[in-house]
Image (cartoon, each protein chain N blue to C red):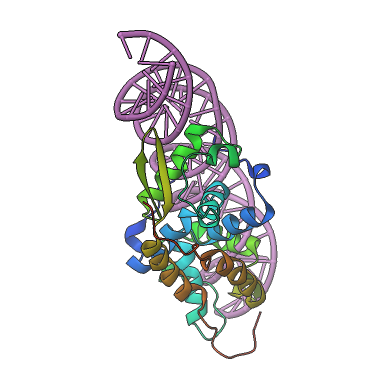
Amino acid sequence: MGLTKSEKFTKEQNDISTFAKAFAHPARVAILQHLFKIDTCFCGDLVNEIGLAQPTISQHLKELKQQGLIQGTIEGTSVCYCINKENWNAMKGTLSLFLDQDLPQKTNCC
Amino acid sequence: MGLTKSEKFTKEQNDISTFAKAFAHPARVAILQHLFKIDTCFCGDLVNEIGLAQPTISQHLKELKQQGLIQGTIEGTSVCYCINKENWNAMKGTLSLFLDQDLPQKTNCC
DNA sequence: TATATTAATCGTAATATTGCAATGAACAAA
DNA sequence: TTTGTTCATTGCAATATTACGATTAATATA
């Protein structure tokens, strides 16, 4: 069917999976890494940096923007993107709780 | 096209996105959380715990197993699943490096 | 005004993912 | 041996994702 049954899961579980989806594609990972690395606000050379077509990059940027992980402001003909630090930290908090889970102390049985 | 162009990205970028894909679905998040919570090795009531059909759960388990995040051993007619702690920690390490990136100290320009 | 630049959007094609009914394989128990 | 239990696999349908050419919108510049 291809349709995730979100209503079967808790908000936390849906949040975690939605955050994960945000960087479940290497192009979006590359975009985010680049925005972190560049110390001036970054605009449109992501297309050169990453080897994908402009509409493709634009589409990935749109997804990241919808998730709130990045934000963009128009500057003349170009658009200036950067990390939304607040939302990034919120994501980090949610995912850290998930990743840092501890196993009950026992000898693994399998 | 629907085909990710993995060859355009670094191994690290592909690793991060592949790990993220592992829990980019709430059912897999729920499975992992349950395996963490249960203090005895877990077998097959994931189907009851989560409200999806047995083949669907089985398919999600297969993906998690292929990623190495869980492992299963056969016990009679049932299969005992648990977290592969070593690989989980490896994933945690890779993702933490990504999530803990710091922005260069500057006033946000957008 | 005309032209160039930048980036979003539209439309489309191809592949991936999700979900489940039906079936099969392995084993336990009667 | 037959029956029941548990879980994997197969096959299929529906939706989602990825990618890009063509176009559009907005602005800057000549």
